[in-house]
Image (tube, helix red, strand yellow):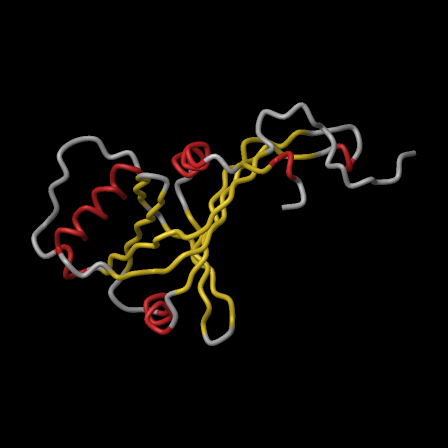
Length: 170
């Protein structure tokens, strides 16, 4: 990472960022071509290990790609605010983001699917008893990403008001 002063390596701080995100962009490779899809998600963070949970229709391009190649990456971010300046090069943003890589695994057993859907609903803010319609799991595909590597980056609550691009000054 070029800006080491913005790097986040602490697992708990990375999880705090992910907790504030509502969408993750999942990156896949479709016959050598990149394919990115935004998804709602849930997660589980245990003993320094992150697992992301997703759901989708049972069929479609994303499912076909994962079946052919389950290697994936993800990106999650929060734009906190734009910091304006007097000149274009004085503008910047307060943000936080996480990227990572891992493998996608389809969850086939109903207990695992229920746990994944529970994690998604909890992350999205559902409060109350989680009771799903009969046969709900037969109508959707639920999968998880076991994250191998990830890193965070933040320019949140910074005193910096310059993008540091060395723009010419007048």
